[in-house]
Image (cartoon, rainbow, N blue to C red; front, top):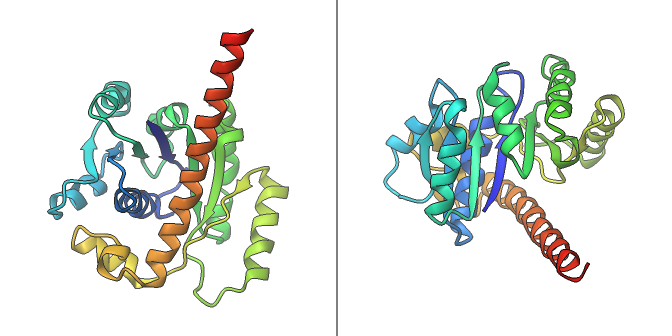
Length: 226
C-alpha cells in the first residue's frame, strides 16, 4: 500500500481537488484506492456522497484516528491511499505528513500562497519528510509557457528548498464543474486537458511507488544476505 498525503498551510490551494483527481486516476489505472478525509469541512466526503462509483472509497476521520483508518485500508486491500489534510495549520497536516510515503504540496504561484511554504518546510522537517515531498504547481494560466513554469519551479527550489513535481495543473473550469457531480475531470471528458494533467500526475506518483517497492526489495535482499 502506497500512501500519498496532500498538505499545505493555507486553504484554497486545491488540495482536495488534486487528491480526488489523483484518486480517480489511480482507480482508472486498475487500482483499489481509498481517500482519507482529515479536513473538518469534509469536502471530499461530501463529494463521495454525490458519487455512484464505489472506487475510490472515501472515509472521514480525525487526525487522531488516522492510524486505524490506514489499518482498515490496508486490510481491505487498498493499493493507494490518498490523505487530504485540512487547509490550515493544525494536527491533521502533521499526521498526514508523518504517515506518507509521498507528500504533495499543491500551491499556486501567488505571493500569498508562496509565503506559506516556509511553514510547510518547518512541518516537513519535524517529520523528516523533506526527501519525499514535492510541490505541485496548481492553478496555472492555461497559456503559461514552459519557460515561465520552469522559472517558478527553480524559484521554489532555490528559495524554499523544495523539490518540484514534473506534473502541473492549470486553472480550468473542468475541475470545479466535476466536483458538483461527484466526478473528476477525466470522467466527464476523458480526452480533456484536465484529465491529461491528472494522468500525468498519477504517472509520477506511480513511478515513486515503484521506486519505493524496488528500494524495499533491495533492502530485504541485503538483510537476508548480510
